[in-house]
Length: 372
Image (cartoon, rainbow, N blue to C red; front, top):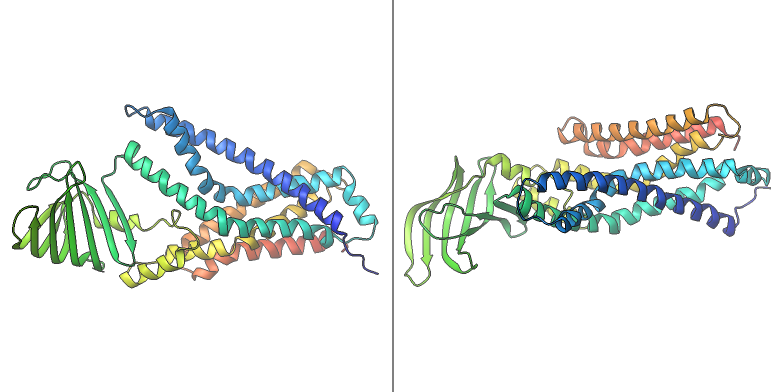
């Protein structure tokens, strides 16, 4: 008669794994935070009046986004240690002798891995996106001194640029809005431009039928100009200097890390309607959806190298093999995503192949190593 795992034993296995996962994740995040902070301090040393508290804050703001990258490793390392720990204390031997199969005591641990994947998608990813967005704003303001801030919404393109050497006006910043964009020429339609002074007071507004990005400037056609305290004026053509290039604009939309999982579908639709290539965004979205399966696959991979460590020689070699396999999965995933982004393989294949292949490998290995 097949026995069922008791709730108390299942909770014990799950809690043991959760504790080890938190420790592994904490260690990895601490190491990454240390190195990131050192790098930020190095960059901050080139600028004046950047307090160390700001550098520490920026390092902290990057942690959720970096944590999502190292989650699979934390899942793998903590699972390897958990199974090794249970085997070393002979607890798995007792469970086996009681008639439970390997799949029964793997179940609670795999369930925790899937739950972590769901929580990462639903909660940690949105938090990480918000934190990373704030980090990039601080980085642009204090370290990179970028002058341009670009976003795409349902209402169209919004762009803000800081003016250092304004010629025909005294503005300190400019906000540009365009309802439609024709790519790849970067021709804007139904354009509005607002000029502000240092106190954020509106100086001027121009409305143009079209605008195009040229070498070092925006060119606006059929312009209606309105200055504060002056009558409206029709101008055939107006130039606005910019250090933006078409490559800068395209790259500003290429990284999906600052976008929450919940807003990605809507943003993808908006970008597609505008004419942008959304392949990288779609791959990122599908990769997030595949994370619970990936985490379960990493636990199966850990089980193949750590469940039998007390009955086999070369424990360190086996665990090292498991760690190496984890890095191999990471590089395979990155490689397939790169192929998908370059349109060489389908998006679903790029995102879902690593967890499926890893899971099937783990299942096959356990079926060969275990007797059920």
